[in-house]
Image (cartoon, rainbow, N blue to C red):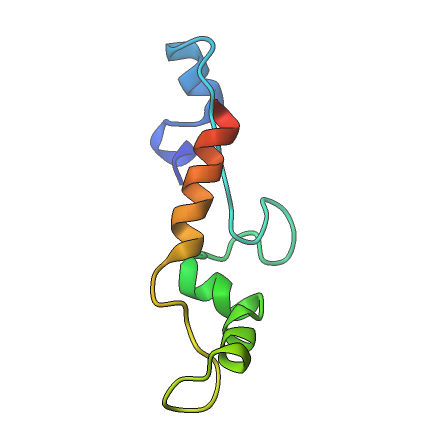
Length: 85
């Protein structure tokens, strides 16, 4: 983690008072899945997006379909930056 490498919100605030620290965990910071890693295709799958995508836009093979781009990763970064501003 960043905190384990000396980049916790507290240590950064000592270096740069007033810094805005934004943190995100795909499955929440607490709870049974808090320690799980998450990225776009994992979140698409566990949230049911791939199943719905397969129903609405079936591909060559039946079943779940991923978005053609990592839309969730991009959108999450944009929204976090917007929220910090």
